Length: 88
Image (tube, rainbow, N blue to C red; front, top):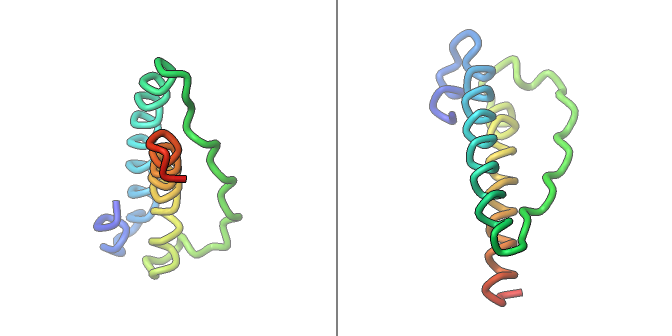
């Protein structure tokens, strides 16, 4: 997704966002099913920030905005694993 977004081509950011969204939906579904077998759930995702138009270009801020859902998902997984393994 980052490579697609960074290419700067027409629609590159939207294409990266679409691919990442589909992938995260599939991964989160699988994780939720596995976690449910042991009585756990992923933390609820935070609401995305309002789109300020940054997605119109391949600036670092726009790319970071596209990747933010993946970072949130990974952060939730880390938090859950920390709790599960007694780190926090």
